[in-house]
Amino acid sequence: MPAPWHRGRVVLLGDAAHSLTPQMTSGGGMAIEDALVLAQELDRNDDL
Image (tube, rainbow, N blue to C red; front, side, top):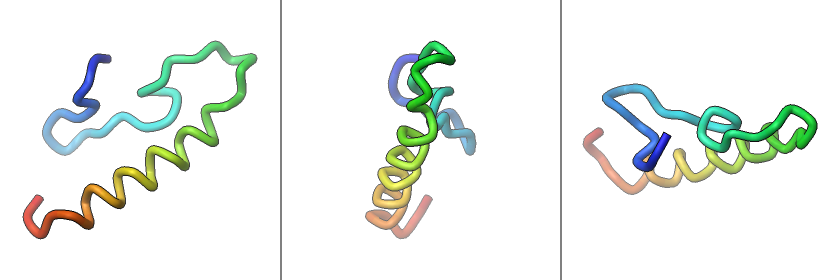
C-alpha cells in the first residue's frame, strides 16, 4: 500500500506495511521500528 500507511483509525505496521517474503523473517523487527515511529508521531500532536 502506498504511503500514507493509515486510513482513518487503521495503521499498517510490520509486514503489512513492508511486504516481505516469509523467509526474510525481518517483519518482527520492522513492526517494533514502526511502533516506535508511530509512538513518536502520536507524541508530537495533542489532537489526533
